[in-house]
Structure formats: structure tokens, C-alpha cells
Image (cartoon, rainbow, N blue to C red; front, side, top):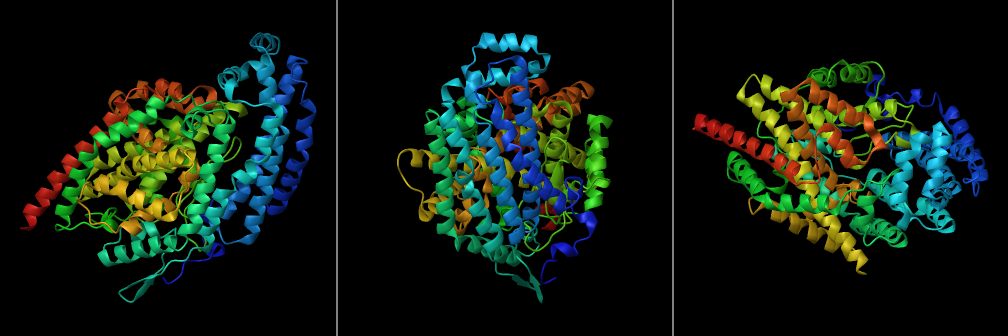
Length: 608
């Protein structure tokens, strides 16, 4: 196949059911207009929150209800654009929706400053007088904890109004990356293999080293052609967040990122971040040993583009076979978990998994209270795609239970706990596949998927976290981010992780920062590492303890933003204040490295 199909050519079953969100674009536009008009419904409560409990409740309910409606409008446009990044019509739709959301946020910017002006005693009296306010208790308490960092009503209005332009850097980077970037195709055995965001994952695990090399170089070179543009957009994003942190009186961007989430404060101690980086660096020898074993297995030579290459071919598995496998792997959580997940996979079309022209890179889960928890990915018939689907289903089921259980104000959850739920699913399904492995080759293929996952979340992501921290510190000290600096520094950090066992193409390896839109969400990436550590510990508990641990886990999924994320994890049985969960994550990695060495040595002895 020389080219990918157009979006319109994909079979319906490979696409998500956006009609369940809006039946047509006409319905979407009517909702957009309604959302724009609702800005006026939010304004009349300004200056009146102290009048009575009823006025306060009405103000909160009006704002959250109207914002939810506007966010659904934005979600529809964003989901459309993610599947056709070159479509100017969808780009316009996203812009229109973002403007309405920003206007609504600006209209409601008085809420938090006015709430903070109310004495705690008044809020307590109001909650006792109006039962409908009681649900907001955690929100009120979290807001009080942020009191030193909430500015005057005028400043908050300005900050809300500039959220759209300040957030535009990621949109610029996405346009350059998903719409304008071009990649050389790979020629292989008379075939032309297209290189794109949706095919690169499959090409990097191709059986041919030449295909892997050519694809890796093509993908890196496509990004390097935009290195100065993307360095500028990343610098703009870092500066924007640093500006907001400084304006709100935080000591650093990191401090603000650890403290704040969308609704309630995350309240993550800095020690959690510091513990992760310290534990990661202490366990780099485990990764060095892994690379040595891989190098031995690959004939004594390991290059940058071979890092994701499997030692054995992945068993072929279709989307529908993978869906059934995941449902079986999650059976220890019971029918309450598996039945809605099965409906989403087989009946309600939560997942957009076909490959088409213009489809953006990566995978994600996206939804709101009252919508499906949609999943975006590009399917290849292998265990790596199965793992991705399991991961995104973890996010979607977390969203499903949170939104089924919590009111609008708590119907989201922190990014910190999000990566626990996603990696938990992968750990559960992987454990089943390893138990059922019919041959050593199959077990090795499952381990290869596991190493791919751990490589991304417990090697690449903590490396990026170290890199990101340096970027913010550099900007906060008045420095600048240039493409040469970004490329050189990231290459140095990866070289440290490879421990001299991998031959490096430093320019292309260092270009990796352009592959991660996560860097436009400040201090997001470290949470992948804490997430995979906690997830594997929880999966072990569920598999060993059964129903009691499963119930704790489901209660964790239902908590949403109603408690701080560290408290949510304590419901499940994990204390992230200690480095112990990250140590347990590296213990799992070390045990898999042991098994890899045994299988590799056995295979080498057999072939001699």
C-alpha cells in the first residue's frame, strides 16, 4: 500500500461514534451558538455570592453546567481535527470552540476570588442551610489552600481572558507537526511504505533493520526540518506557564504544577517528584544491564533505532481479538468493570482505530460527563497495539466510573492518578498473557511488549522529566531555549540512560523532544513514571488478594476530584509519599530483565 486511505474511505466500525456526541455538524453549530450565548447567564452572579446560600449554589451550578456544555462543543471539534489534521474546516471549528470556552472562563473568573473573600464560617453556615452546597465542601477547602495564589477579580479576569492566546503554542506545534510535516517513504522489497504519525510505531518494530533505520531517520528528519519553529513554540509554552506561576506568586513553575489541577488542587508534595528522579537515576544500572542483554541478543550491535525493535516477531492479533483478550484479562475486577468496557468496544464504538491520511500521532482517551470516553489510536495487528488499547481503556474506564459517580465539579481526575489506571490495565492483561504463554517465543514477545511499555514510562518519561525541569529552570533564570541546546541536552540525558551500550545518532536522538506534545502540559511526563510504578503494585495486589483489592481499586476509580490524588491512591492501597512504590516498579523491571536474560541465553545456546 503506497498511500493511506482517506478518512471517508475507512469502514465505520474502525471509527468512533461521534454521532452520539452531536448528530450532525448542524447540531454542533447550534450548541456552539447556545454556548456563546450562555456567557451572559454566568455574568449576573458577579458580586452576589455572599447574598445567600441559594444564590451561591445557583452561580456554581450555572457556571459548571454551561462550561460542561461548551467543553462538549470543543471536544467534538477537537476529536474531528485529530483524525484529519490537515482539514481547514476542522481547524476553524476548533478555533471557534476554544474562543467560546475562553469567553465563558473569563465570564466566570469572579467565582474563585469572591469565594475566597467569604469567611470560612460563612461558607460553613451556607452549606448547613443549603444541602446542595454540601457537595462542594472539598472544592471549597482546596480553594482555601490555594488562597495565597488566587489574585484579585480583575487579575483573574485577565488571566482567564488570555488563556486562549497563552495556550496557542501547543496548537501551533500541533499544526506544524500534524498538518505541515512531511516524511520520506521507505522503499522495501518493491513496496513503498508510507511514513506518518500513524504508521511510525509499526515501522519501528518492523522485522527488517533497514526498514527500522530508514523509518526512524525519516521521522526524525521530518521533525528536524521544523526544529527552529518547534523550539520557538516550546519556549513560548514554557514562558507562558512560568508567567502564570510568577503572577500567582509560586516560587517556581514546578511548585505551581504540583499544586494545581483543573478543579481542585493536586497538592502533590515536591518530594514525590524529587523521589522519582532520584530513584530513577539510582536504578539506571538496571537499564544499562537491559541494553547489554539486548545488544547480545542482536549480535553485539545496538543502535538508536533498534531500541524499540522486538527480538521476536509479535503474534498477529486483530482489533477484535485484542478486545476479547483485554476483557478476559480484566475479569478479576468483576462484571461491574468488564460489562461497560465490553459495550464500549463492541457496541458503542468508543474507539477510533483505523489508519487514514492526516490522522495525528499517538493515542489518547477523551470525554466529559455525559459523553462516551472516546479512545483515539492507530491499529497494527500486534501485541503493541493490544497494549495501547488496554492502556487507553484504563483511562476510559477511569473516566466512566468517575463520571457515573461524581457531580460535575469532581467529574475529572488529576493527571497524577490517570496514568495509574491506564498502566494497571496493561499490567493485568500482561500477567494473564505471561501465565498462558504457550511457548518461550510467545513469552518473549509478551516481555518485549512489557519492555516497550516500561521503556516509555520508566525510561523515556523520567528522562523527559529531568529535561523538562532544566527547561523551566533555564527560562526562570532568564535564559532561552534554542533548537541546538534542546537537541544536545536531550541526547546527553539519553546517552546517560543507555550507559554506553547503544550506538547513538545524537542529532536524531536529541530531536525526540519534538515528538512529545506532553511537554506542552507542564510537568505531565513524570506522572507516567509514578503511574506505572503504582499500577504494577496495585495489579499485583488484585491478582494476589482478589475481591478485597479489586473493590479498593474500583473505589479509587470512582473518587475523581472529590479527594486529592494521593488520598485517592491511598483508597486503593498505595502511598506515593514514599519512594517505595517506585522502588517496587523497578523491582518488577529487574525481574523481567532476569527472565529476558534467561530466555536470551537459552535461545543462544539452542542456536549454537
